[in-house]
Image 1 (cartoon, rainbow, N blue to C red):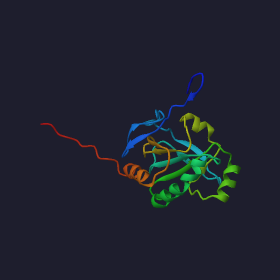
Image 2: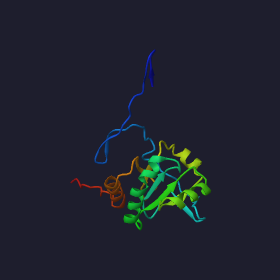
Image 3: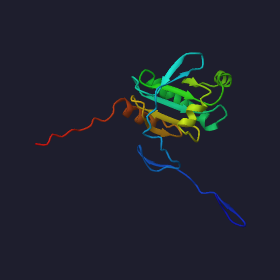
Image 4: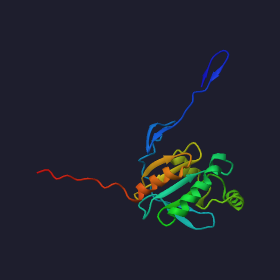
Length: 174
């Protein structure tokens, strides 16, 4: 923010992306490339899940909270992705809200991910901001993409890449 005697100027921040490549990002995403160690979390309903470390499929973590308008707006898109990739990707919604509050929210709104609540420590560890935020983790537990504002086609291209990573070309020099 820049202030003068008679005005306040708020610099405008935005993302500029071509395909999956960002030419400009409004925030620093230093955590891309971060390896997430395996951690056990309790899900709403009492089951447990391990996030991070080696996994048999990639994971999409949606970071949200119950009074976040943008979070609520992207839920139909996220539900659509879950239907398409249900057997191929782990879909986890994570929030700092308490379990009771999330359960009440889910009685009124459809959000078909598995839900981890009270996750302040984990969210703090990965230094997440702002909301909503979608974190794509590969099968090795490495954060590959961080996206805001769900887009079906864009998210499908990321998921497809995580499911079938590009083969590394090897050349044999004689």
